[in-house]
Image (tube, helix red, strand yellow):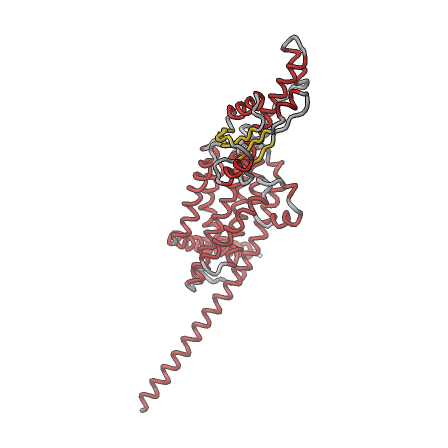
Amino acid sequence: MQCLPMSIFHNFIKALDDAAFIWRQEVKQVMRDEGVLIFFIIVPIVYPLLYSWVYNNEVVREVPVAVVDMSHSQLSREFIRSCDASPDVRVLFHANDLDDAESLVSRQLVKGIYLIPSDFATNLNRMKQGAVSVYCDMSLMLTYKAIYQTAVAVSQKMGTEIKIKLSGNYTDREDAVSTMPLAYDDVPVFNPGGGYGSGILPAVLMLILQQTLVLGIGLAAGTARERNRYSDLIPIHPSYSGIYRIVGGKALCYLMIYAVMGGYLSMVVPRLFSFPCLAHWQDLLLLMLPYILACIFFGMTVSCLVRYRENVMLLMVFISLPLLFMTGVSWPQSNIPGAWQGVSWLFPSTFGARAYIRLNTMGATLNDVLPELRGLWIQTAAYFGVACLVYGHQIRVSRFHASERLEYLRKKREVRKALKAKTSQS
């Protein structure tokens, strides 16, 4: 009975020694492969900086538009001047008709059209409702937002001025009450600037973390299979009960690298570009640990599908945009069909991006993101088990290739011996 604890202790030390050996071998493989180094180090460092710098302005300004003024009245000219004076819109062309304006849009000289009908001033002077048609290029939602909201704001301002003239009030207070009976303040929740970067880029940072990690792991696996060097994919061949040592040792190498990259992406980049940073570093640490582990084991599982180096690039680049939509950040989560929501639960980026945005952008606590944390830990355990099965299969394949090679060499030696004996007899 006293020998049992000692045997457990020796087995534990042996497991640590095997995992450390796998870790050393994997570090050597990573350092020797330039492609893996690019995805593990260069891309996570440079790509978030470029992406954040492009969207650092947060909102678009001076969007060019064309105006078709069929009214040619003082009120229509006032509407045009007010739109041109706004920070978001710049009136670049005055077209004769709608066809000329549409040709300007098709040539990408302008992003939208304001069409003022001929009865615009007449209807307003007769106490009827006037209308202005707004045509927008919907290929970019930011320009659509700027053009449409500017037209709405100008029309509301002109309507307020008309109300004041017709009210017959005597004081400014009466004018304010008649035009705005209920005062309100428009404050964008969790995004004070109303910018694209603050709203979308936190999810993109989490997606970059997952994609680069999976690309690097898949690239290393594809390289080993291309060269038929299974010793690079699985450095040692322990018994099947020790597969977890292989998976754990390789995961330790990736965790060592992405512990630094995760801290850089989650804490350094948002502060460099003044994105909202409301989470404490302890909360981010408790989030990033299961997220990185889930991404690692997910990448090791996906690597079983990689036969050539290029395969993983095609696969992950193809699904990058759908993964961003399925996080529920750039497209409302409530509008995602149930089947696709189920598919999104297979990817760590879904839970990681949602939890990171709630912690760092919305100021939530760990209790608020417990469902996402549970999902990440479940993914970590599930993908760890699948990775063990995948690498167990690789061990069998590797041993099969090794036995085939040994059998081939044995037969070759026998043939040589037979030819040598036949030559000596003759």
